Amino acid sequence: MNAVTEAAAGSGAAGTRGAARLLALRTTAPENVVPQQSAFDEYYREMFRDVPKAEEIFRGSGVRSRHMAWDPRTAYLDGFPPIKTRMLAWEENVLAMSRRTVGGVLDEAAGGAVRERVGSLVLASCTGYAGPTPDILLAKEFELRQDLRRTFIGHMGCNAAFNVLKTALDAVAARPDELVLAGSAEVCSVHLRPEYTAEQAVVNALFGDAGGMMLLGADDGGPGPVVLGTHTETHPETMHAMSWHIEDSAFRMTLSPYVPFYLAESIEPFVKRLLAPHGLEASDVRHWGIHPGGPKIIDFVGEKLELGAEQLAPSRAVLAENGNCSSATILLILDRILREARPAPGEHGVIMAFGPGLTMESALIRF
Image (tube, rainbow, N blue to C red; front, side, top):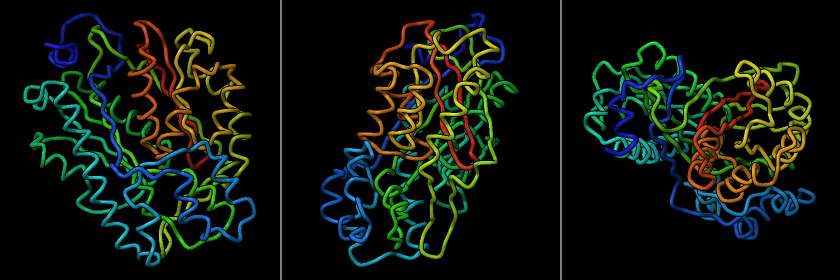
């Protein structure tokens, strides 16, 4: 058996009390890749023709390409579809991405025997709504247990993967003999709207589509990443800085240019409160995943925490190749850290994301 199969079967070794181990992780995105400059030249340039420095906004976004279910160069040629059409596209694409990620983690964990041990499924998506929710349809398609505990998390924004993770950690702590599927899928591309402002130019320069899924189980002392703990803070005095509302034409996001400054003021004590219970400081952490709400967030957080270029590279690379994919982004970054940075056993990592509230979420991982 491979390491994942052994972990799912349980080795009986002593683990970290109350911790959960990441047994498998898969990420995906729509096949259609939209180059940033081509999209601007062929569509956004005309859309934002009355916005000063619109091209500068797109060039300065840190994004080179995005995976988009709805390519703006074709999907919006005949105008802006109604919300019903958008929600149908959301549901179709969330299911398509989640089929790939759920199937991927179950295959990696050796399928059948593991499937019977999956007691909970937690899925987040902030870009649409439908009932039955996608988690019900996925449970049916993958023939998961009839007594499966399901949680669907919506409308919490870019930090929602951490709400998924925390729900999964609670499930593992309550029922350590079971496994948990936990992930997210976002289809941001269906929410282009007829609003021609600099703020909406920023939003449309950043967001793409992606999904990810984790398989988690109780830490049994075996190899692989262990989630040691999480930390959450909400700063309601800055709640005006980021919002996400449903309007007649589409969902509408607001994103203040001051968000990086708010985060820079709070990030050091926030990280200290995550690490202190584990006897660690920021300098003890080798690997970092910072949700790239925009390039300045990576810059400001990296500067405040005194992180090097190599430590910021996974976040910058995901921003460049995928854009900001809302809640799925941090799973893309964690996947990249595991595949490319190849953390050594015993090294620590911190992942973090930020969303409406202003909400700050984080998790400490031991590789």
